Every structure is written in C-alpha cells, then in structure tokens.
Length: 83
Image 1 (cartoon, rainbow, N blue to C red):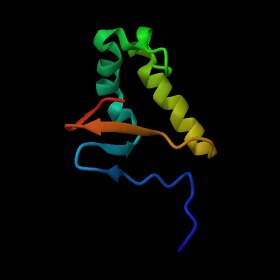
Image 2: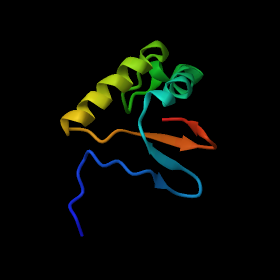
Image 3: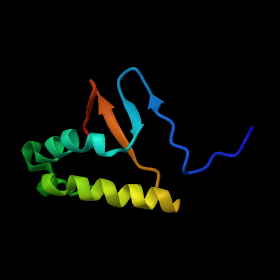
C-alpha cells in the first residue's frame, strides 16, 4: 500500500453525512450555518468565523493545506455544508 499524504483529501462518506474536501463552493452554505442562531458568536467549544469572514477562513485553511499542515473538510448533510 502506498503512503497517504495530507495533501490527498478523499471524500469520506456515510449514509448520514459526508466529509468533502473544503472548497470555496462551500462558502455560501457555511456562512448561512454560521449565521443561524448567531453560532459564530455563541460557539464556545470551537472557532466559527463570522458569516462575512467565511470566505477568508476557507482561503486560510486551503493555504494551510497547501503547506501540508491541515486537512480541511466540510461536513455535508442533506446536500448542504453545515460545518
């Protein structure tokens, strides 16, 4: 079996949820998820960007991925990115 690199991001699927490699295409749904119930203000257990900053956060994470220090996925359920 060959070595797996952090730069290799396969989609990880389950009947209820899929982890997809993060992309800018996820931005509108993730901004909506952050805005729902002001999650970006209330989440004490993780860092959630403000809805208007989601695109910048995706860009930051994709940059870290390109450097080999992060493997960013989007959590998708029902065809919509939620995290």
